[in-house]
Image (tube, rainbow, N blue to C red):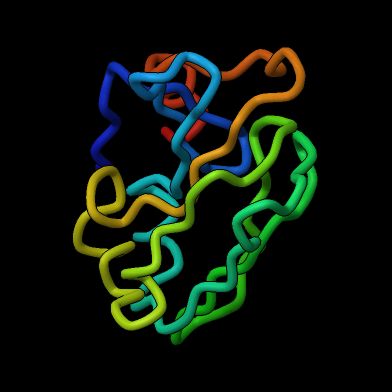
Length: 126
């Protein structure tokens, strides 16, 4: 069974969303369920700081020894930070998907689409 932190929100595409100290910026990553299904992650392609991402649209890729999976932006906004550690240590997505394995931070430019609660995401993945 995968770990699902209660304080986060989730998408049907298996990304998580966290609030930051700045209410106009969110941090996102892939869920424990997603990293487990992918297996050993060997490469991550993410948007660059300053790029505009659109909610529910592809904004990157995660490559594992099993497959390549698309990353979907949960919100519309401008990328304000990228986890540069992942370029040299993509395995952080496997070992710490909710902490050191975060992907990007997005400065919101639109009202976020409704996200799943931890309970709803748990139901989706069970």
